[in-house]
Amino acid sequence: MQPNGRSETERTPLDQAARAGWMYYVGGMTQDQIATELGVSRQRAQRLVSRAMSEGLIHVRVDHPIAECMELERALMQRFDLQLARVAPSAGAGVDPAHAIAPLAASVVEKVMDCAEKQTIAVGTGRALRAMADEMRTMDGKHHQLVSLIGNISPDGTASNYDVIMRIADKVGAPYYPMPLPVFVESDHARDLFYGLKQVQVVEQLAAHADVTFVGVGQMDVTAPMMVDGFVDPEARNELEAAGAVGEIASWVYDENGAYIDSMHNRRIGGLRAGANPDGMVIGVAGGRAKYPAIKAALKGRLINGLVTDEHTARFILQ
Image 1 (tube, rainbow, N blue to C red):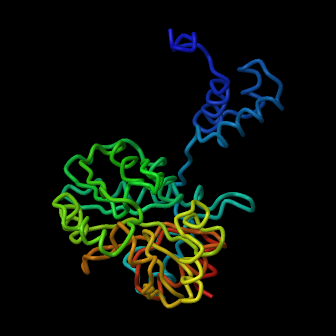
Image 2: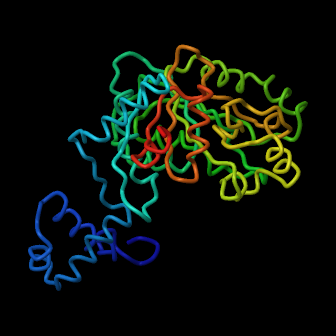
Image 3: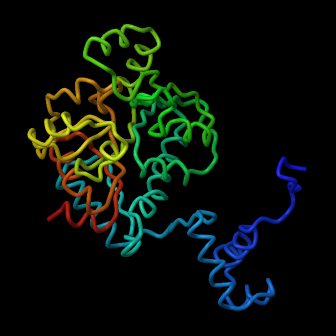
């Protein structure tokens, strides 16, 4: 028995939704057939299938290349001289673009993991990267190594929610190197002291030789996670706004030209900038209206040389 008194095999409210989702997406059954099989009404069957998707019990990937998305990919690569571009079909109004992008981004990571030659893979943070990690299949990537660009300690001393690397490592079995620092340090002097530590220097060296880096791209308006989560205080916010901040990658803030801003905020970041290896690939995983200016600026400034995004975002960027 489990601590709550239930046996491990006792049905939960999601069991029926999971079964209905399996029948619909894997078994190819109609909702009428599912209703008959489960002994419920057609309306109930429809709700169960919808719940299976909304609860993240079902992961869908489209293997057929969609012509319009491929055209956008070619246009992005040509316009911004990218090494890689992948465009997912937009999922419709009201759907978080991160959910549309995640399966496609997961397939890109999996392709890197399938490489027989050892790869050093650096990882940033963001909702799209977390969704990407959740979409990844379990696979053998133990001959690779993962390194985080982001500090893993919040201001109150708790583990940061910004760390994605552990999610990916769990899926692929690769050794991983977290950044053993606060997301933001107290001062320039404190940052210098931290970077004198051997453990931090190991992470810095690995990131400097990363073959591939995956990063989120964040906006810098009032909806930005760094703003909402309290990582940017009013003084820093005013400074960044005056400097023309439009986006951030791994917490490093940049302007509309993709140039990192010389600011108190950037001098206090505990982590590393993406792209230290000039021969490496830095792939941005991002989409959505709020991020349009940030993504376009990152491309313009060559902060990223690869992009996984959705149709609507791609079309805006190409305007």
